[in-house]
Amino acid sequence: MTELEVKIKDIQSKLQLVLKKYAALEKENQRLEKEVRKTNEQFGQQQQIIDTLKQQMEITKISAGNWNDQDKKEFEKRINSYIKEIDRCITLLSE
Image (tube, rainbow, N blue to C red):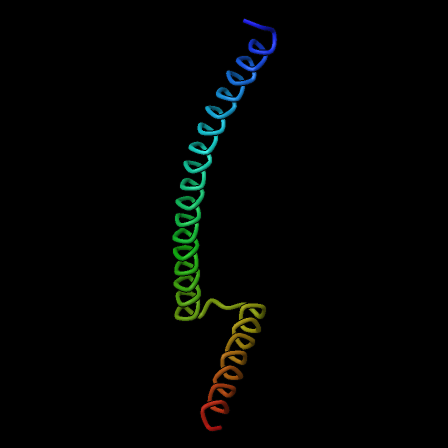
């Protein structure tokens, strides 16, 4: 076997090794992407639970009457923003 043939076979074996590593990395990448999607879904679900619990906590505060001045101001701001949004919607619907 000539020196050129030996080098070609060496290059071929290295290329095969690179292709195997590439395939393994592609498979790992797909697995990690799937894991990221799953984690993002779980995060979204947890965020929804947190939002629901915050709303329930606010409702409990409102119904119990345990408000401090800061809570009252925040509640008024939120109500005012809802009213403004409703007014905008009514304006758009009446056009």
